[in-house]
Image (cartoon, rainbow, N blue to C red; front, side, top):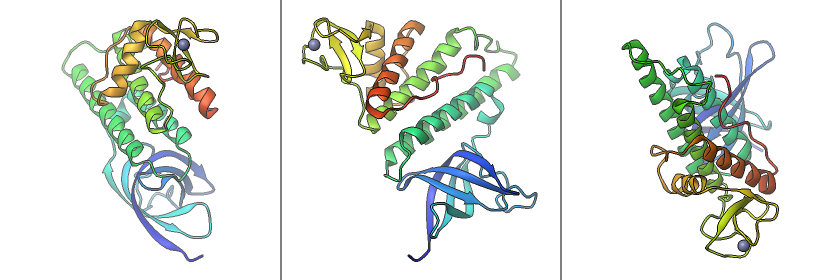
Length: 266
Ligand SMILES: [Zn+2]
């Protein structure tokens, strides 16, 4: 097998120290899915890569593909470093959870350009919001103090994270069935959600399901149908049901358990 050069856009999902001065990277690319790579000498002070190979950087990257499963990074130019996001603990945490979800749900080389675009958009939105809240604090406005008490700021962040996850489910072919009972097709009296059935279930089929209220139902339907920039509002209890529905779907159909959508004390 001959070696070759690969040029692609990529987002750095993870970056782990390796050996004396190297890093192992998980990259997410539009046309090669998740790519494991090694950046040699990157931790030396005079590395030509600078700080570009850190998580959440969007890059033009050049890789060398040889016999190893790990591709070797030979060049990198920054498209977006998401600098504002890095100075905001909550945005940073949300970005880490978004990257973790993409890396685990789409862990193969199968191409999903739509997922790459979703991730770029989500990181861009987190960066924008971090910039806005920094501006508010600097301008003497009220700082967001409700982050660990479940106030409106925290609810908004959770809604955004769950809307992103629902779109990932859709891209993975795992979108929950919402229009009719996933078990019998009934369109009325949809009262529960069943991960095993893969969607909402009616009152006759509710055994083994959990209750899903109107607000949670509307949130899921709207989040799946709208752009990421238009996260539908929903009260905290409904978001709890949505998160449970996503978790049950992933557990039954992908045998996967993700981190909670948002951290508790960021
Ligand atoms: Zn039914």
